[in-house]
Image (cartoon, rainbow, N blue to C red):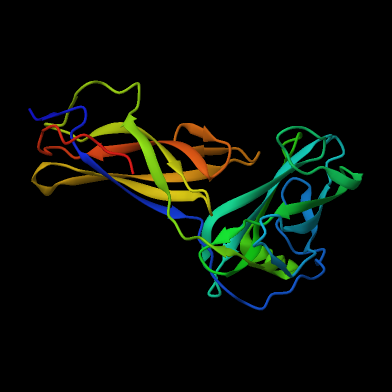
Length: 284
């Protein structure tokens, strides 16, 4: 039976910031009123970005996004949803962390936007989206890549990226260059972990906790790599995810923003991996 010690493996963190790429000629335009996905009476009727280009280098740039959602259910009294804004490369790849702009028909926390006109049958929304100051390139292309909503009668709406292109919900932004990557400290086994794990016949999972910071473009995802005896390694993926109400989580831990994050990550140590206590783990 192989015994894996409580801190058996050294540590490396490979982390990705919220990068930005590049450059394209983009135009904001009026939103067509038909042809999007619809379920249970909910429909995205309009979507537009008011500015086609902004300078975000000062750290206080915003882009105004306007949209209209209709609900055919007469009994509906409330609606909740999110608009996802993300960087897009010139070849169409999504880049970095998605930014969620959340809304509800009845004003309530933590939803960011409320109706500016209309009824729940056809409600108009508008919100000044704060454009991040830093990116991996000096000019980045952004787009609305998803719209979701649900009402209190079970109606749902999900409009994916390919069905949003007709709305032309895009803009470019000038950014400061992100010059540093994420850093970590406070690495330790999570509090609920046993003192020893045994992997003689089957793989075992160890849960770690760490604190990740990135003052510029923010943390998005990474990988925890444990290096053990005889050159063996084991790893676990780390990702910051955003719920439909705008809250952030990294594993089991909640976060207020992407610049200062506590994360939990599970690392699977394969069956038969050699035992031993590794060196003390240092922060960087």
